[in-house]
Image (cartoon, rainbow, N blue to C red; front, side, top):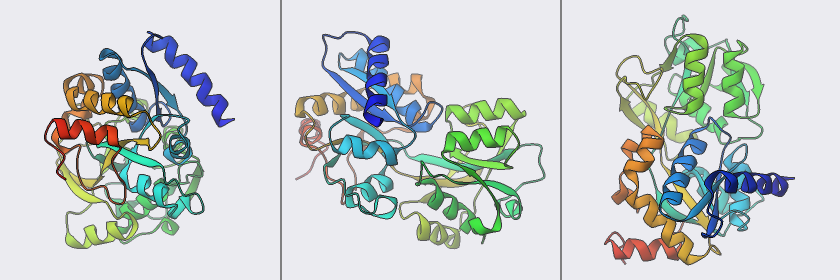
Length: 318
């Protein structure tokens, strides 16, 4: 069934992005409205503008499509580094499913994430969520539960302190919030679904987390790559009502060991050279630093096609 869905998506992508004579590659993403779909769409547009025919192939979450990229059913994917390495090693929610063929193309801007509530509610802090109905479950997107745990831990809470509202994914969680089933939802800042929820309820508040060593340690117990960043209010970040700090963690574009080296080389080059184009398609790319595409990804390894490009521009050190 998954392969059928991707075949349908591929056909749809070809209709959208055209030029069947060009080399065609797929980019696996989460559902429309998610940050990974926004990122993948921006990358695909830049790739097509550069002559590499890229098609978006959405699934519910990376824990569904990372195995497909691993076996070269789809050439590329977008995800976060922690989940990528869990998939690579067969750990956490990938236990029993080692995806040893996954390879790194490049790091991109970090995900900045928050729990969002209605701006007009009496919930002002994470601690105020205690005892209230909150999204939980995430059966199709298991990466979200430890992220929720990490945010709750900064306020000395756990998921057991909430009344669980079962949802399969972050998009479904936002829908549960919009419909009034949950008082809040977790999502990445700047994603399309956050804008939708902001408009639907008349305004959001993104709950901040403390910028303390204790909070950082609490985050890392649940999400090893998590850190804290400061954000200012702005049109690209609905819910950020005042300067505050939020959880962030690395994300990346990835591929598989069997992917065509020339295609990976071209995709790496496209991403490196297309910040302005990708920013126009998805404003959070304003924080993308091309020279930061090479970084610490262990145990994840870079694909030879990506390494070849990074050597040409002086980013790869032997």
